[in-house]
Every structure is written in structure tokens, then in C-alpha cells.
Amino acid sequence: MTTADIRSKFLDFFKEKGHAIIPSASVVPENDPTVLFTTAGMHPLVPYLQGQKHPMGTRLADSQKCVRTDDIDEVGDNRHLTFFEMLGNWSLGDYFKRESISWSFEFLTDEKWLGIDPKKIYVTVFEGDNDAPQDEESIGIWQALFETRGIVADLGNRIRAYPKKKNWWGPAGLTGPCGPDTEIFYDTGRTHDKAFGEECHQNCDCGRFVEIWNNVFMEYDKQSDGSFRPLAQKNVDTGMGLERIAAVIQNVETVFETDAFQPIIQKISDLSGKAYIGNERAFRIIADHLRAAAFIIGDERGVVPSNVGQGYIVRRLLRRAIREGRRLGIADAFTARIADVIIGIYGTHYTELETNRAKIVDELNKEEDKFGKSLEKGMKELEKMVSKGSLTGEQAFLLFSSYGFPLELTEEILREKGQSVDRGVFEAEFKKHQELSRTASAGTFKGGLADNSVETTRLHTATHLLHQALRMVLGDHVEQKGSNITAERLRFDFSHPQKMTPEEIKKVEDIVNDIIKQDVPMHCEQLTVDEAKKRGAIGLFGDKYALMGDKINVYFAGDFSKEICGGPHVERTGELGSFKIQKEEAVSAGVRRIKATVSGRL
Ligand code: SER
Image (cartoon, rainbow, N blue to C red; front, side, top):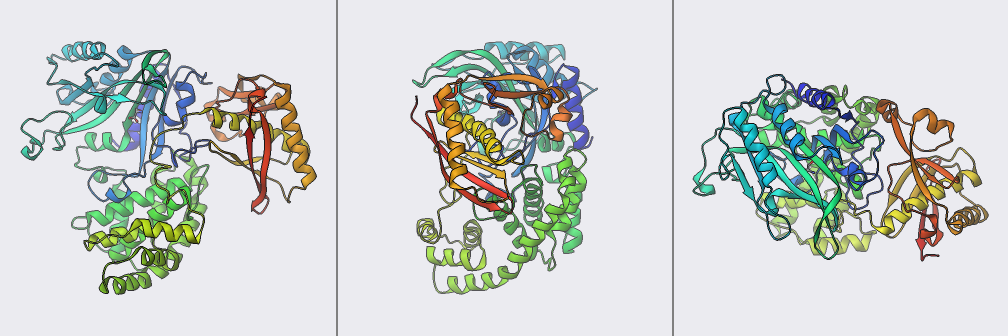
């Protein structure tokens, strides 16, 4: 069974169970300043888990493109990946524990689907504490299911209960929907390594058990005083890493040996003349990092290598891969040639990769050309610096500014020599030389999801009003090219050929402030694409929506603005207070950028 087979079986299975199959959301989140990338399947669905109506209904399933950047330096071992696909099914106030657990069991063990021997399945549940009781319901459902296959499922063995640290998910922000989860493990049959303790169990690190699926039962709403109240809408949120389940089904030791990675590994071998065995670390870094870079650049909201935000991550990934390629002895440009193989593997399902093939190839070639040239010189410089004693933060900054060595790459090279860099000094240098990027100020993107705070919600509504006002003042050629919202300001990129005049800026501000003063209600309607077009809604009428066939969410600000959007929004425009454009500038040819704020309330 190939990785593509597993993906389509999963989607077919949940379609049979009444789920709408939704396309993967962009890997670059829109309107969420707290993370750089989509980190889980549930991430783009947060507004719906919080109660907003989803246009496709209450049962959804998909395969979501995800990127996690916390452990980039760990990639190279046998399990870490930056990019991965997460299979997931959701109930938005529809079914709950019984259906969720039964379907997971059926999909995993039924011969018609994955056909895993049920004896190989072990599970965990929440053990209970002061906030919520032990998850007896899940325990009962699991026991009955195992029994149908003649397996006695004792609590403390086949089913084990753990505290919140292991078996609880969320809330996404500080408050909000959360609940116990039940995790499903596969027993690889490897013998327990005593180094990890006397007794082996599901969460033991010895490698015998592999977690394959997580079913979260959102039934509580965490309050700002820290208490947990029952949630009005009970949801199910599940996540299964596709690469991992493929490794299990294909009975291989690591994800890199699955069919999805093998052609990439083979290509690296062809280009380097080296074997995978003996060079696993370099091969894995190149394969993982180029896969992630291709998906990020080739995304419908794709980003290119740069020194800030997501672009910096792409740069780090590419430069780390390039260094490993050179170390393997690949002298010529190779990243784009490997990307071609990657696009070949994934382009049928993720068609945006095919659409953006030229862009991916071009960006990889540019980056490799730039860094390939300075890498060797930089390495010589680094060796010289190290031979004179340990490397200072200033020197690390010099390697960054003159030779393009991302700090993390310098740190990795030094670690290989048993040394480290003074990050504080590096960052001080960095700050001195340019505006401190989000990347250097670690913490701003350390996981976590948007809390949909009042501030970002107000700015989100303000963005809609601004968009419409710009079209009224400048013309219908104005289209959204990008949007980013933090708690402090909105940033809106749009198509327009020249600088706005002070009069135009003033006019736009006045229109938005007038609608705020009128305190018009915001409301959302589910419309078909045709209806939305007929009613003059603006926004992205991409392939995505055509694919979704059915209905889309359109937000109305009274009858002033109509825009396709996933929300969330304020209830009435009066909540915005007063709107001010702080800056209007060029982003690129034909694209302008506005930064604006809202303050106070009427
Ligand atoms: N949100 C859960 C996870 O990421 C289930 O999808 O594991």
C-alpha cells in the first residue's frame, strides 16, 4: 500500500461516514501572527471548533500540509520531519467519542481499509484530575471494540491512563476549547530497551510503541480564571501523521524508507554517487528540508527565502541542505533537481506544486547559486576564527552578514566541534544592523495557535472595511495580495499601480470610520460560489472553492462589504472604535501595503 493509497483510503473511508472532504489549507496561515506555519490539521479549523458554522457541514476530513520548525536541528535522526501531512477527521458538534473511536478502530483494523492486526493496537486515555474525571467513556468504548475481536483489553495494559501532560489537548490559546484525548499506538514488536525503565508501556521511549493517531474530544471551555466548564458544542479533532502510518503499514523502520521518500533518496544517491547506508543523516536532512522548502515556496500563499519570518525558515532549510549536499560531494546545483522528483511524487494530489513548479525551481536555483558560492569561503573563514579560539557572537554575525550563514547553521557546525556561540551577542549585533526579525526574537512563533483575541478580531473586521473602501476610492482593480494581523496592527497588501495620495488615504479612512460610526452588524451567510459572485462578494474565488463544490462563507458588514472569509469577526462595526492608516508603501511592482490600527471604542 503506497502513501498515496493510504491518503485516498482515509478520505474515502470518512466520505463513506458522511464527511465532506475539504482541501488542505495553505501551509502559511492567514491572519494568525502567532505561528509561522500551519502546524496541525486542526489549526485552520479553529474558528469552526469555536462554534462558527463551516460551509461544508459538521463532518469534515482532509489531509493537511503541516510544517513544524521547533526541531529543525533534530532532523537527520530516524524520526524528525519538518514537513508532514496530517490526516484528520472532525466533528463540529456532531458525533462524539463512540463514533470517533469506533471509526478509528475500523479504519485501522478492517481488511477493507488498513487491515492492521488488532493485537498490535494499544491505546491511552486521560486518567483524570481536579479539572476533569478519568475518561471512563472512552475506556468502555475501547474495551467493547477489542472484545469484538476476541481481545481482553485491561486497563493498565492494553489501555493505559495518563495525566494531562500526555492525554489532553488544547486550548489553542490561553482559554478556549480543550479536552481529553485518546491516543492510538502500534506495537512494532521490538524488544523493550531496559535503559528506558523496568516496564515498557505505550509512552515508553524505547521505540517499541509508535503513536499513530490522536483523537481529541473537545468538551471543555477553559476560562480565564483557569477553571474548566463544559463546552456548548462538543467537537472531535483527530490527527494521524501520514508518513508515520505509511512506515507502519509498509513495515519499515523509518519514514525515510517509505515509498514517498525512496525516489528522493535514490536521486540524492545518483547525484552524489554515495549510498544512503552510511550517510543516513545527510540524506535525511536533504530529503526532508527540500521537501519542506518545495511545499512552502510552492504553496498558494508561497514564501521565498529571505531574512525574516517564514522566508528565513526557508533559507535555513535550503542552506542546511546545501551544506549537506556539498559534504556528500555534490559539486553542481542539485536542489532543484531533487525538487523535480518531489513535485513528481506530490504534484498529483497537491496540484499547486505543479502550478508553481517554475517558481520552486527558480527560487532553489537562486538560493543555491547565492549560498553555494559563499559557503566554501565562509567555511574557511570559520575554520580560521575557530583556530584562534572560540567563536564570538560578533564573528557569528560576520559569518551571517558576509557569507550568509544562518546563526543556527553556524551553531550546528560549532556543535560538531564541541563549541557554542554566544547568542546574546549575536542578537545584539543583529539588532544593531537591522530591525530585529521575528526569527531572532525567539518565542513569537514557538508553537501555539492564534487566540483570536479581541484585538486581532477587530483588526480582521477592519481589514474587510479597508478592502472595500480602497475599491471605492481607487477602483475595482484593487485586489487583496496578502494580509497579516498582529494584536497591534493590520497589514494589507493590494494591487494598485502607484502611491496613494494623502487625499486618497484620508478618503479611505473617512469611509471606514463612517461605517464604524454607523455601527452596522456583521453577519455571515453560506452561499454557493455562483450566489456569492452574483451578490458581488469579493475575495479569493480560487480553485479551492470550486473543488469544495458546495457552499462558502461570505461575511457581510451591513450591505457595505461582502467578502469570502473564514472569520472570525466582531458583531458590530462600532466595536472598532476609530480607524487610522499609519503607513502606505510599495511592496513590489504594482503592489502596495497599508499598515493600520484601530483604537478606542465608540
Ligand atoms: N490536534 C491534535 C494533534 O495535533 C489532533 O489533530 O495531534
